[in-house]
Amino acid sequence: MSGLATRCELELPAWVGGFVERWGAPLDSPRAGMRLAIALATQNIEHDSGGPFAAVVLDEAARRVVAVGVNQVTASGLSIAHAEIVALSLAQQRLGDWNLAREARLTLVTTCEPCAMCFGALPWSGVRRLVCGARQEDAEAAGFDEGDKPADWVASLVARGIEVERDVLRTETRALFGAYRRLGGEIYNVGADGAGDS
Amino acid sequence: MSGLATRCELELPAWVGGFVERWGAPLDSPRAGMRLAIALATQNIEHDSGGPFAAVVLDEAARRVVAVGVNQVTASGLSIAHAEIVALSLAQQRLGDWNLAREARLTLVTTCEPCAMCFGALPWSGVRRLVCGARQEDAEAAGFDEGDKPADWVASLVARGIEVERDVLRTETRALFGAYRRLGGEIYNVGADGAGDS
View (tube, rainbow over the protein chains, first blue to last red):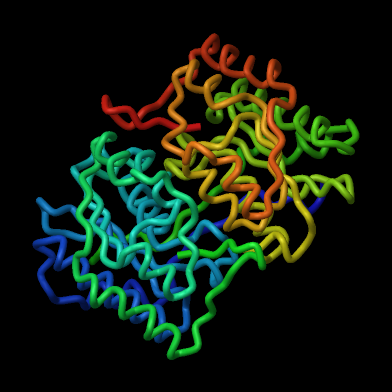
């Protein structure tokens, strides 16, 4: 079976580390975390390094960023590389545990409501709070496909011990889609029958 | 932001490459692919290298394996490292494209019906056919949590151009859960409120 790939990686673009390092604003609230996520998504668009989505794993009690993610689907060549998956995985990598709940009560701040895959990934990650900017319908209006989630996806997360807060800086996060289009960003889709990404 | 992780990787256990290389049986049907997947899950249990789940990406027309995956959640420390995610990502890595549909009409053969995350990941991957062994209720009866999928998840995939075949070697795939338990495998869960993995 020569040619079988045995490993692949999720990696942030080179600009991210320094950008987060220089981020001087306090990280004392989900809204403050969302401002960082918006800035990361904006940079991702401007660097042409991926889709208009970013996410931040916050330790709200410690007021620190544990990990960040930006959409890296086209850059990495991996369809799983949504901002939320990248951020959660890098948080687990940093903390050395697939179950974030063992470390602290962590919050995932994301510029857009999770797609069906990222929704399904949340309970497995051990994150305890989800804070969303743009609504699913905002992403869909921009041409992105969010997949098929259970109609009561918020209630599903809550029942699994994950708090959900929506519409945080929704206007600003929704504006990311327009910025992406204006710069000619690719609204990539699997095929005519409709699969896309966020 | 010192300490920020910037990369992480999904990697197969060392035994997998040689095992697949030595696999002499023909791969001329989904059922034949399932036999390889069952053998991989069995090896994963016996090597204590992860949960009792495996998946194979098959090119049915070319009768070849494009990629394989075994559950690597505890081994990799990443909650996304389900067999299906590993197999799909390694297929994309091998083919150099996040959209498998651009390469060939590929089939994902998995020893168990996908959890909520893997269900959501399927349409983004470009895979065109899903072949499942054990049912969700078989995994749940063994203590695994499959998450909350839309009630009509099969119809959702079909509507997105992904054929679904279920119950292929169901008895044999279901038996993997018993083998895992007998060998003392961990049924890991995020917390008392119920999140697990497959």
